[in-house]
Length: 210
Image (tube, rainbow, N blue to C red):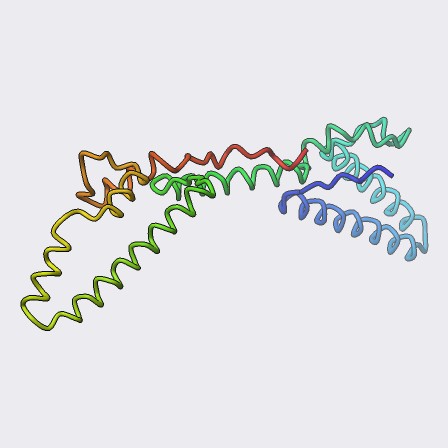
């Protein structure tokens, strides 16, 4: 069974049709009222004149509706295609426009905050390095608390005087050249983005509506 198409109609168009239907109902109701009150020739003439005038009003409205005359004769809904195009909008078109507006808002919101894709291995590496840094901090924290004498302090200072090889390996994995170190947040962020992240095109998705 062919799925029935769904359309969206503007509120003002819908309300205009309601108003016209109410108007036509009023005309028919008035004719019925006049017909029920006929008592003499004068009442009959009044009914005929009123019916002619109401017929003219109906013709004016029919012309304004732009319903093809063929439809009155054959009742073929294909003849309504032009009228549908003027008054109705396919639901799929409305949804596509809505999604396009949402994507435009997302692009505007993320223009200064672009999205990236990171591989699973790179993500695990960065998590491992974060954990390693936490472990190094915990170890150093405990060593500092254990210092009681100047001799212990001097020994700790000596152990920390050189660059730790673990940190140097992290630099290499993050994309920091061997000849430099991390001198600022922006430098570290730029190196990781360049080495491990791939820009994600949020508009690369296919439309889900036919």
